[in-house]
Length: 314
Image (cartoon, rainbow, N blue to C red; front, top):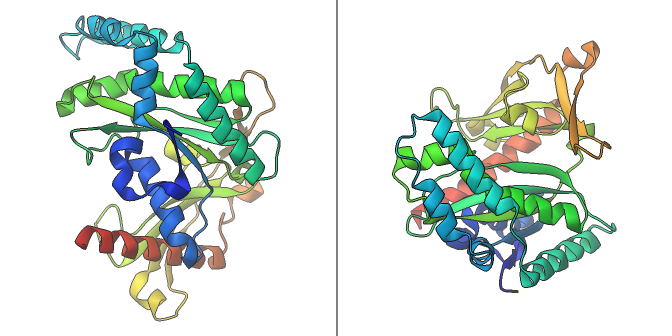
């Protein structure tokens, strides 16, 4: 297919066409599955699809004319109107038939892979600058969770494209000196894990505050991971010492219990795919992860770090 790349066919070298986020997902699935690292599969809608959408709806010149109204990013009122007007243009465009066909075909294949009629997916935006493939746009665009069905998926894809022009993304590009119209958007469509009934979090291969490289730092909380990403909770924090872990010891050197007062779970409401609920006082006071789970995750992080270090040095 012209506008779709399955994660199993993506490597880190594909960052120009699928952005850093999707390229990394593909790299881990293709290269680290043999080490027991489990990553839900899916597919990327390429940056070419974004340009195809704009061209088929004849949006590019209109978007440039609107953007020309913004002379100073400190003018909040103008910034908000410019962003809103461009997003409105994108959201009201018509998805080209060939792109609809490819996206729905890939989605049906993903649903069949997981043995369901309509797979629940996360729709994530992965921006890339063709002339600066190493540029990072992490956290600038929007993510949509618990999306299922052709209509809702296509709608989320349009919203993802439009989020390239949300206020924070516009300001970031201005501050970094990027041309708004040389940055494109790839969209990742990935099977969701039902962490709304369990635990999710983030992990780092070093101490993010000090830069100390001999530890793995894990943050975990109940429900979907967006609660941590959005700063809605204070998660648990676990520190594992890497050198002794690699010698075979269960070297957890620090555990801090976070408040974890709320969590994000799936919603059956037609107007929202997720909702925020309270966590019981009992669950707030206990660690979200067992020691065995902490050690397993730390081993995964070390394996991932080693893989990317080899790539960097090769």
